[in-house]
Length: 459
Image (cartoon, rainbow, N blue to C red; front, top):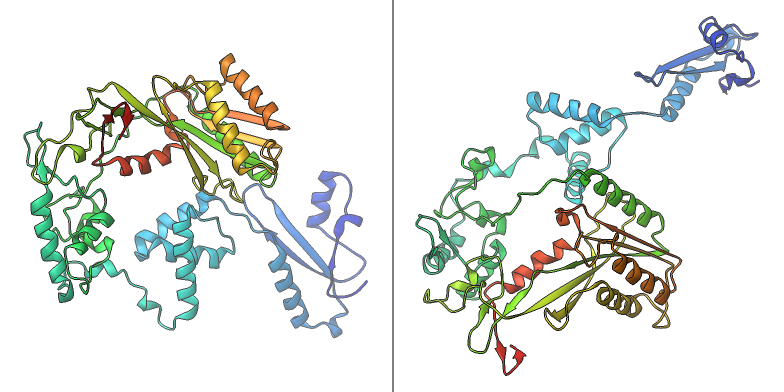
């Protein structure tokens, strides 16, 4: 038996668990040995390692230290989210350090790291780690937001002046409300506002970043800590209309867990499956010739105000025909189920709401055609044996309906699949469907758009 080498006690310990504990506390062997005990804490118990030592006259403390270092490197380390949260809450109040630096400290001290909550957090952690390793002066890691409110770069003065003129020209009041709130219907985002302001300036002019432009507005909540970062240079509040009131349902927890299992299964069969998310957008109204109707059924004030503040389109309440866009999101299945499932290819099919109403068999025909175009080698059979689908709870996709089940069987046979799994959201919770993210892009494209018919056709 070689000295200074770890020994497995399995061949020496008693089989009885009670005697084993007593034997370990009063360990006696036929040779001299060193002993090291590592306490994991909680219910994990202790880890005990021994090694044989030579006679006292031949022992070397350096060998013991070397062996202890090797043991500590291979000892499994356990940590919980509660431990990390407690660490962050405790030291953030005392040190006032940023969360990214505290996360780096936690990884360094414990040797254990959790996966980042999102890609932005992962990018910040990587940048902080690179800075701490490559910088000789950690004091350089400061929050640049403390410079807000100081003298700005004079090269942006022309842009700020032109932006102020633009806001005075374009912001209008609501025609149905009496308040001091004004709206800017011709810029749907800060990036759009920045680009439109640059178009009014000579080509050699520069503009500040979108983040700096946003901080020159009024804060959304003047009582929050982030309000201190705003300069309030313009008496305008940048906000997006939100509809966050969500109906509750007793099956919401079950449906969410089911979607989690579906994503885990998709990742497990990533190379052998395709995943679809389906949904129909709200009807785009169409009115008779020479009577354009606002394309957005939910009013965003954009299609009701023109350059001279005149009424150009009719209200969305009055229309005869309509277009129904059906969205099919072919998801790029990630490598981990906690990564985003919102990346992929989007396929949109336009249908007339009266002559081409949505139905389970029509959806099955549309998705079969899309699958054959994208995931087929012979334009008939799917080149992957498993199809995973997630939809909302509308009558066209409700899996408890026999019409939906028959349409699913038709797809299963037409694409020559080995497995077809269809799940849906809980009632009144279609916002969990990843296809709903595509609707926001549609709404941006339909801003300030009016649709009318022309000689029996759409225009």
